[in-house]
Image 1 (spheres, one colour):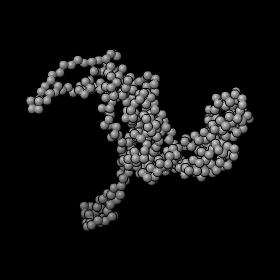
Image 2 (cartoon, one colour; image 1 turned 90 degrees about the vertical axis):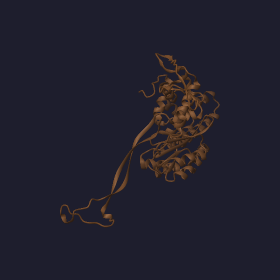
Image 3 (tube, helix red, strand yellow; image 1 turned 60 degrees about the vertical axis):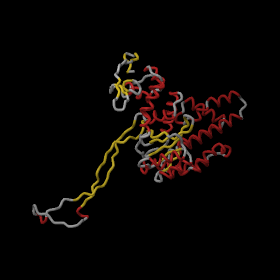
Image 4 (cartoon, helix red, strand yellow; image 1 turned 180 degrees about the horizontal axis):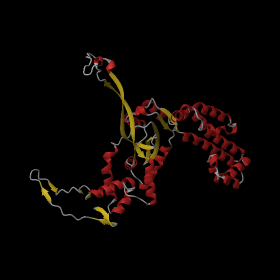
Length: 415
């Protein structure tokens, strides 16, 4: 098989001589460096299939190039099975940990939140698998903070392998509980209404209650005002949600803590049960939640797992496009996508010996010296620059998936 010509399948019929070795009696064909004997195709054909298999699902490639889906899969695994386990990325300043249930079980997800890139997709999210990965992570002492959801075993692993890093509870897992409290209040109010029309109204327009006040359209503001007058508890709950969101606008840890205490005092007793989950979570994870403001104050970075969740969405899209990829295929497609690279500058100190000085100002005569004197050496900072790979560029991966959905694709390496 060769690359299609004028949108037609191309097959080269080739007659090759076969030889027998007089020494070992084994047989072999006349060697041709442009033929891939494993797949009975030209090397450029095999390379094209392997490149496309990273972006497109196997069945589409099989139809377009006139081979079986099994052949595409064989080329794919043959090209990448040895590369994937040797791929190592630079340790980031800010790490993200999450899990994703896909291909039959929960998988571990590791991301670089400094560069918004994917680092690793683990076969499971057990303590043993995560521990083994963290042990082999290079330069893990450089990690400053780790973002995660409120999972205690993740926190214990971070304290074990990254004792210098701050644990930051993901903002969106915390504020989501506020939306759940609003929805529970809406359901409670709805259950006490006899009018079917009013019940349907509360059911259809529940998305308005989840929208931030600054993002409400004019018609949504009118709906909210009518709800405030008809159902005061819904209005109170919506205001509590907005007040809780505003806690994350605080400039420091202390300010956030004070705002939370004021917000907690505003919760009416009849609604306390709906906010119990959020209050319990804050009590158990207060230090990790407030670490968000410390990181923001020190580095100016609002550390969240938003890009980790974005990667999880792209991973699901990859799985849907293949309609049943194995975990190994998904991992290869995710981690061997377009890479994000950059230059890292570091400094190291060296001791440099000073040149001897002339004695008495006379040219050509130098002082004699016996022994080692610290005054004869100076310390100099030397700059080291090196190119590193941060991980898989999530934005480029998103472009791949968009091209697959719109059927407007480019060849690998073009555009």
